[in-house]
Image (tube, rainbow, N blue to C red):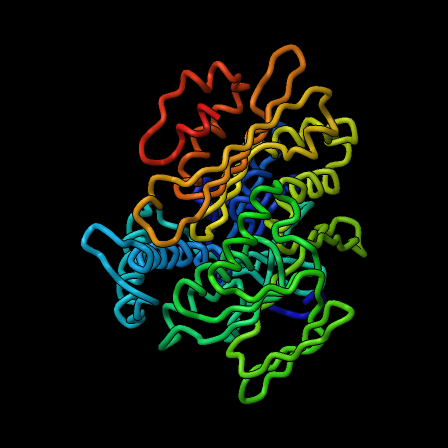
Length: 436
């Protein structure tokens, strides 16, 4: 990729002016998504102009849109499977008519796309050796950041599986092996199993979601096991053989197992960041980032301190950490998880006084369900002169909706008194956050 020639169609960020020349001091982020937006917002406070560009063959953003639609469908299927009241009585697994479901999802995706009010300007991007060309004009930006910059592929991956599933696959795969223990892996495992697929997951760690709070790690593990997902912790994939079907050999160091007749092998990308040093003064410095979502709230700091070490010094890192910790993270398992702020371990490292509240209960949603999934919330309070909510980690129905409001409030240093004066919205279980 570094020495090869590649061409892409791109969509310019709507905040830029069509046809405007690229400024010398400008930073260009290609395929940055929400990660790029966070970098842009920080650098704007330092009067650094950032241009965000998205290539047309960049599938992660589109894949996320399809994921949300498939997630909604799988949630409805799960409700039919588990309800024992409301005139819905089913036993065993509900037959999934994937043909009908695909039509529903395509319609929803089209509606979302039509609701976008701005018209995106399409550009071509070429990378030739150390140069990046936009509309056949060599970029003079000092820094260019390529995020997950991969070309389109016909192979099914974790970055395009939901697009492929809806548009190309005639049926739900019967068996899938996933290598990885981060967000994309657990989301895919949860939803595919809801749709009737047999899923195997291996991770080199002893937990899923290693950067998240322990209550989310444990809840997601139990959830996948309850769904029938086969899990291999502390394991490595030794070999993958793709002929007429896929065969995967996995080992934990003492026991080696071989799984046959798999339809797909999906591997989650690991976080990495590298910089190309320009051989000629005046050339753009290119930084490549893979899977920043896998190092959420740290990858942003990693990039800023590498590109602008004079602005973001080692003394600024704690301030940046506090800022990026307030970026909420959503995990679309079924039920979902959501997290914002510091973990208990992080709080104990930086604060002298830490108070933790961890309510576990069965939400009202499950009162009429055969499946009795536990809702698990964790609130982390820290205090210097005043006690404030520093971390909120939720697992259970409506967790994503609940955490959006509280994450905004955490910017204002929510105290326990502020939380008690909040009005919860039924039936989201948000009252359990308020009462603890």
